[in-house]
Length: 505
Image (cartoon, rainbow, N blue to C red):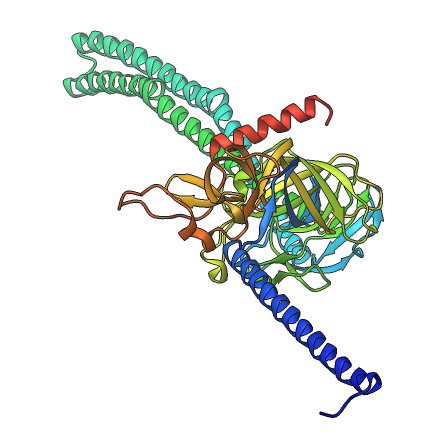
C-alpha cells in the first residue's frame, strides 16, 4: 500500500467539505421555498376570504346639497307690451326698436310700431264723425220745429179757429133773432091781410134756417174744443217725442263715432312706446318647447295685441329660475339657503334663499314624455351691480345637514325586505348588522343606530351574501334597492338643520 504524504491528502479533504456545503445550501433553499409556499397559500386564502372593498366608519358633518343650473331673472320685471289692437290682422310691424341692453330714463323712446293703417282709418272715421254731426243737427232742428208747431197750434191756430167759429155763432144768433122778429112782424101783417100765407111760410122757414145755422156753428165749436184740439195736441206731442228720440239716438251715434275716433287716435299714440321708468332693456324673445324661436324682437317683426316686446328687470331684486327633477324635488323647500355662482363673474359666490317651488310639473314635449321637472326660484340676497338678467348660474341648495353624524356610503347599505344591513368584517369574519338609516345625499347615509365608529363595512356587499346570515323573507316580499328618504327621515334632517342654525354652526 503506497504511502501518502500530508500534502497529498489536503486536496481530498477540501473537496469533501465543498460537497457538504452545497448539500446544506440545497436543503436550506428547499426549506425556505416550502415555507414561502405555505405562507403564500395562507395569505392567498385570507385574501380570498376578505376579497372586499372596505370602508372604515367615521363621524363627520353630513351635508345634503342639490346643485342645478338655471337662469338669472328679475323677480320684479316691468313688461312692455303692445297696446295696439290687431283687428283681424296678424298684428302690426315693428318699425324701430331700441338696442337690447340700453339704459333708459323714464319717457325715453323704446319702440315704434307701424301706424299707417290706423291713420287711414282715422281719416275715414273723421268723415263718419262729421256726417253724424250733420245728422244730429238736422234731428235737433226737427225736434225744435216740432216744439214750435205744438206751441203754435195751442197758442195760435187753435185760438184763431175758435175765435172764427165764435164769430160765426155770433152772426148765426143775430140772424136767428132777426128772422124771429121778422116772422113775428109778418104774422101781424098777415092777420091784417097785408102778407099772404106764402110769404108767412117763407119767413117761418128763415127762422128755422137761422136756428139750424146757429146749431151747426155751436157743434163746430164743440168739435174744435173736444176733438180737433185734443187730436192735434196728441199729434204734435207725438212729433215732439219722436223727433226728440231721433235726436237723442243721433247724439248717441255721434258719441260712439267720436269715441271710435278717440280710440284710433289713442292706438296711433300707442304705436310709439316710451319707457315707464328708469332701467335696462331686455328683448322678450319667445321660444317654443322645442327651443325654436316663435318671436324675435327685430325691425319688421309682427306684434300681436298684448304681446310682450321688451322687459325692464329690476336689478335690485334678482332671482334664479332652476328646474329640479321629480326624484329630487322632495328635498327642496322654501326657506332653504343656497349658494349661487353666476357664469362670467370669475367664480364669485352669492347667497340666496329658495322662495318658491312649483306644485305642478312643467309641460314636457315628446322627447321627455316620461321625465317630470318642477320649477323652483331662488332669491338673491345682495345681487351685485354687474349681475344681469339672462345670465346662467350654478345653484347649490343646502337641503339638510347633521353635525358630527355617523356615515356610511350608500353602496354599502344592503336592502333586505323592510330592513337595511351593512356587512361588517372583523376578527370573527363577516357579519350582517341591521341599521337604521337617516338622511342621505346620494353619497352617504347617516346611520342612526346599528354601527360603531372604526368598524369596517363592505362597499360591495352583494359579493358576500353567502358568508352572512340574513332572516328569511316571506314569498310576497322582494328585495329592493337603496331607499329614498322617507318623510320622517326628512323631518329629522330638517330638525338637525334648524338645530345647527340656532347653534351658529
